[in-house]
Figure 1: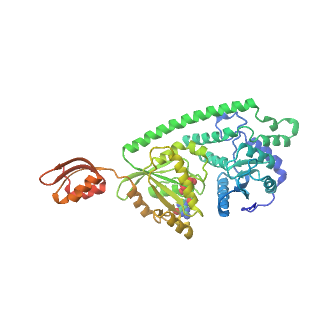
Figure 2: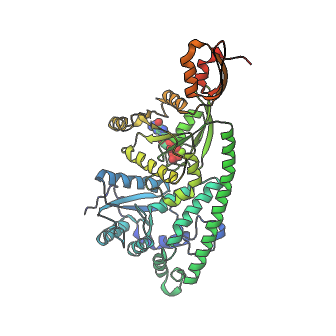
Figure 3: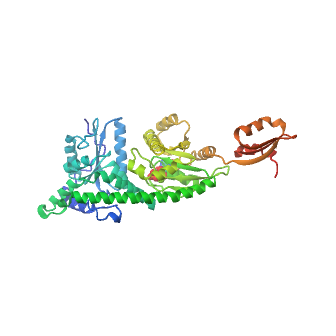
Length: 475
Ligand SMILES: Nc1nc2c(ncn2[C@@H]2O[C@H](COP(=O)(O)OP(=O)(O)OP(=O)(O)O)[C@@H](O)[C@H]2O)c(=O)[nH]1
Ligand SMILES: [Mg+2]
């Protein structure tokens, strides 16, 4: 077993403030982030992380040491995106997480020391923990403990803007919360109650009674049902809009990819849009669609949407299913890969996993995928050559410098489904090969053999229509 701190500790903090912090936190923890309809569910502690002092901890069960470190580095970025200050990080080498306390009991003691010396107020675990694990860790560490799933849900909650996005995030949060209702946070409340003056009966006595718990559960179930109804109603509206686009036969291209890969930047470059670009994870949650035109003049729409991450909480995938499925209905996927990431291969894998989860059980197959490796201006040459090998058909671009963008635009144009052009042409007998080609590629409406040649009435792709231009019969 090894414990490797990968972030320098910032030295011991003022532990004397601990009790005060604890009280403040208990006050803060009550029902933040939930809608007003649940405001009186005091035991529903969906924990917010804003501006907290955190220590990260991970279990390294498989893969290389570099991967384990990268995993914690990503957790650190997530924590910072959520607004926390990362003080320290630990990885424990273990075959599997401890069923009771996630990390081993010896390591829990070490972690407690680190928590004390850094004056951290929160520990974030790099996985999805059971409520039992969370409760036991909190009892031992005496600070708030949350897992990676809750952290990601928190970022989504902070970034959600649209009514639909907010409803989707709340649905995900409540689904996460429901199985964890009993007990999580209970031990900490008791601690706070004790520290706050023993017999006064404050915080410690507010643990959920069985009846209260049942009421909370019922309320949450009702709320979940309502959210599902609302989300499906909003989806109907969006489907109608999309149906209208379809009817106009404007093909849609969807940008997908790992969070922070540069999807929004590419949307801006390709369409001249000005959507939010941020060096933050999950900057984009709401889908944005913009019109674009190929160099040949064909119109299409480009949709930017929520990014993916390794082990995207399944509650989020479920809640965002309608948004994500829309992606899977596109005519073409632009799969954006962050070339500046040290291990972009893992991003590609994670994105394909989420896409597979979305399309699972659907009858329509995945749209064709065009991989775009972005940020080549900032990428390591070794990583790029690995990617060129792994993704021989990818486009290599930089949204910042514009490198490779012209080529990408051509590739998009080629990959778009072509609208069919209806032609009426009279081909001389000498053009037998062309007649055969129209039969093979086009949709035949009528054929007539006349004295002057073959009269063809058909629907064909624009390029073939171009070839036939000289033989068109003027109406
Ligand atoms: N060096 C470099 N940085 C880039 C490039 N494209 C985007 N970035 C930066 O990468 C960060 C993320 O860009 P976004 O376009 O917001 O990425 P995104 O995929 O939309 O991210 P989310 O919406 O958060 O999932 C920003 O800081 C961009 O400035 C590029 O070609 N080169
Ligand atoms: Mg974005």
